[in-house]
Amino acid sequence: MNGRDMLLILAHLFRMKGSPVSVVDAVDFLSFKCRYGAPSDVRKMLTMALNNEMISKDDNGILAEFLYDKQILPLNLSWTLEDRIRFRDNIEPIS
Image 1 (cartoon, one colour):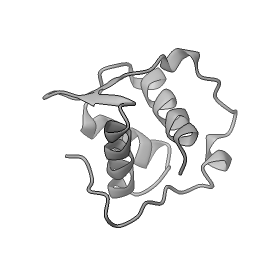
Image 2 (tube, one colour; image 1 turned 135 degrees about the vertical axis):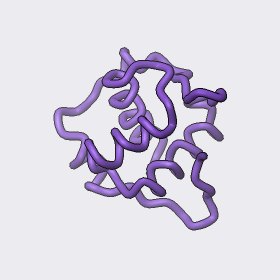
Image 3 (spheres, helix red, strand yellow; image 1 turned 120 degrees about the vertical axis):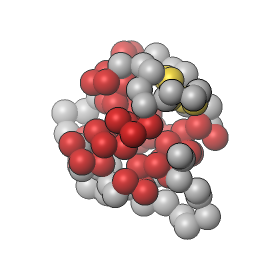
Image 4 (cartoon, rainbow, N blue to C red; image 1 turned 60 degrees about the vertical axis):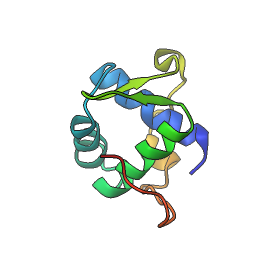
């Protein structure tokens, strides 16, 4: 997954849920409502976003570190993301 795909997913999340959003709500929304991937894959994606300073994390949740309302979202994100998020095994899920 490249950074643009991650930005699209995060922009969709923050537009729908606002900023900040709890990690549990983010995982529930992206994994079960949007069906972007398994909860562990979504948590790994959030870890990658945190490591790349796309988001920041505090005790209560995650905050957007980009202008999520300015991103151009395609009509069907599922096709953009090939219906699944995949990561290497060495990335630890966010908690």
